[in-house]
Length: 134
Image (cartoon, rainbow, N blue to C red):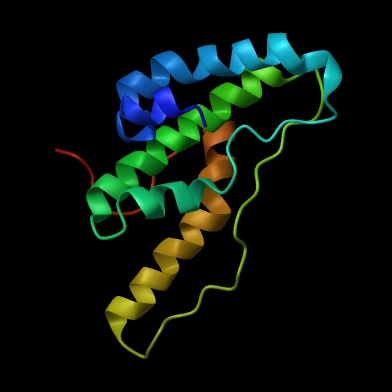
């Protein structure tokens, strides 16, 4: 991830990311496209959101939505060339205890890990489970 992108708001600012991320991916494709065997435009997108807003579910969800769009945009820019992949943390998600909130948190994380990203490609947008911006 380029430092200037992070400094200007990165994936925490959906409008900024939507404008600049595809252009950055295009520039990388033009510069390196013939010299590589594959692309990883966003490594561990869940970790990106977790680092940015670990304790704010609404902002965390907003960043996940932006990351799904950025991932989909990168895939569209790069398709037809070397393979495009994304690395996810795929550890088993289990409730931390026997409470209903713990069960809901585990279900939300499972949905994020295994459904959100493919839905983003299929439906052209993702929708994270959880609080939405009003």
